[in-house]
Image (tube, rainbow, N blue to C red; front, side, top):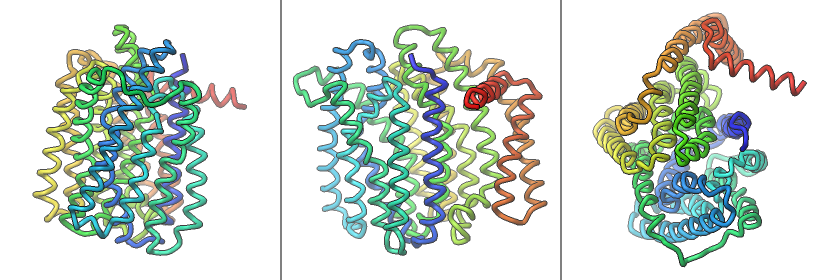
Length: 485
């Protein structure tokens, strides 16, 4: 069985690259493309995401949960993989049909037609990705290597082909290449190792019922994630969409890094719960929750303190309006990560998809209603506030439906101590950021010193408070450095 620590490191590296890529491209793109161009790019992306969801159904979560039980049985996992691949192929065909109907019916989309069609390439390529198969086998080394390769190629293409304010279509094409280019390699590897192919004679109903429940839940989830940009585009204009897109993209990038530890733990937790090893399951869940709290709270506070500097470095002066919405979005991190733990690590392994559906539906309704009422008055600020409210509702509802499993984890003295230790450490971050801001006028120096000294101050506070999880992470880091040297 592969090491969770190694997988967390590899997935963290992959997520870190997903941060480095935008950090390299954002400052360039925000200066080369107009705010309106970025708005068109993001609006098209938000539209196609709904059809991507149709293609994906609830396959990824379902396949990881069910496939984890078969991974030591070659015959069963191969048959299972073929059945899931076939379902995914059919859902992609349906997604394309729905997309073309909408493009014909809704004239509002005609001005975005080419950009939407470029993004639609992802629908077909998502089928041959079979990422769920590599996740079942915890093959994060392969996933990480292929991500590095295609992100490097994409950066090179970006600087070659995106050089003018109207090159947003080139940017969209390169983004698609970065996202789906490796899927061809995925399919080749999957076909070679598992003989993956289409099959039609199997018990569809066995898979489709839980998949459709997860699909419906994912629809609700996508609505409360993407309706912000979609409604800003419909109720406001491309400029406001461009402003909010910067803050929401930064929020999403940092969230993806924070969730790296969570994602590598999902197949292991599903395996433990599926095999009724509840004691080991809860022990791993407790450790995961403590580690994520230790990482999430300082990220939240640090982003609030340095939001202006980050916006200036990444996007420039003409995106300064994004600062407030970014600060508001930062508050959502803690609710989002905890809600994610409860959905992916508890409700799905426990086969309680219908309860996750309820949570996401309520969150989506709140998000849409608040956005429709308040966006005309507060624009991007309303979109950010609605995200915070939705994440809070999602967490509260998920906890209600999983409390019989997680109560001893979420009410443990261990987790309470971690929360208190982390909050005390965050005071150090605030003090450092305020001090550096007063002492330095250089934007780059101020930002770099604030980040480095904040990490140092936060770590020192946790060590002085003798937090066991922080001490363990520090020890592991030093051991890894010694082994390298």
